[in-house]
Image 1 (cartoon, rainbow, N blue to C red):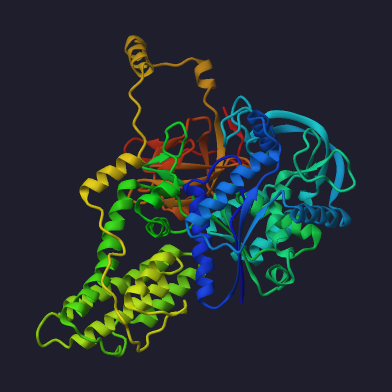
Image 2 (image 1 turned 60 degrees about the vertical axis):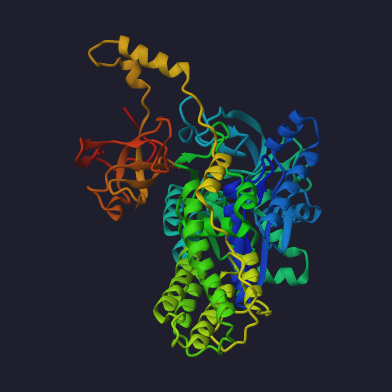
Length: 629
């Protein structure tokens, strides 16, 4: 079997943070797992380096765009090396072979009659490198993602006939539900496509930092068409690499953040269909991370540096935590205190204690462990569950299965009590050592360095293989803690290093409070004040519970071609499945707020006080995004 997995290529406008690290670690764990199964694996990552935003940043920095991109490409390479990422290839969109393949894609699309020339006028966000319609923008022509003013662009442009792919794409999603995962992302994408697709401007003439349009001087290929082609162009580098795309049986997986689902699940397959090229197997869109309950922000100073955490507490501990903490596809909160708590409880206590106490007793009693007897831990059953979870892109569930074995091993020692004089110590400790050997292989995709260290202490020198229970001889070494416990003093020191300093209250807060106290009126507002509230019709695409919050649901809303996330306190009144497809009234220009670690990008209206009696709605089928007044 061939397995080809890709990260998104990361934009060279900033250094790597936890979001980039998470995607890449997930891909690395999946790549290592498939190698463990004996599959032929290609794992690609890289950097996205073209576009108007990079040209402007380079100009501000007084360097060439290439020099600017080099610095960040080097930073990504260094970070992935430090985090034990095992990518087989690193692609840059400034690579000459990639640029040639982008032009090949353009020619194939043009040959098949899906490109035409015209003139474009629209609202463009340089930070997003994309155009927006007026109904997608916030009041005042503000980008909904970056909260900055967009620019009105008018220029000659080549267009891609995206509109003619509405039905082919819907047919693709229906026929191959595995193409977009998880299901809530598929629902969002299908709702967007069902609204009807518009032709897409795919060239620019106002700057030159990009791939030239073939035979059309002055035109630069749209940065997203350029960037998306990287997944294909990386497979053109050798005859062996080509098989990862060209072989119909090869599994091709794009792992991305949910914010770029539309580009990967709509534009990219449409480009490939237009060129007559093979489609990927799966686009998997994972969720976002908040930090200690807040959205990551340079202003708050809470952007998590993965290298700082890895240097302070260990690379494998960091890798383990981000894969264990949340199911892949869901949003998560990186809580520094919980990170240390999980490290102590599961790595230092559970796994570390299993190994240390076993090796300690072997040396204490001076025994030679017997060959392992019949498996007392149901290793085969758990290994099957682990493999199924990894095949289904659920590394957190796979780790849950592994920890069944870890806890079973500690429970077995407690039950069999090898310290008792009449206990069959050789048999008991031989079984636990064999369990530790199996665990070292199962854990290697997640914790590659510590897994090898575990095998070294067992005195087992063997290549990574799919684990099976078998008799084995061990040349055990002295026990050395795999994960030294973090005591209270060290914990305090680490939290002070990792967490941002809380800013003091500003004078603005006091002024606002004083003004509110002085303004004594009857509570009524003016028509002008009411006019500032932007009410829109929205359709619920998906709904799911907010973890550890029995009253809250997280909703994904279609607000007229744009997806917005809302946290609503309606869980006691509505089951999540009953909400999908409902039309609700949405406050579109409310400032985002973080509720229980989940960002809410607006509010839906409901009737009732402490008890929700019903959702506000409309009496006709009105398109999402329609203004309410």
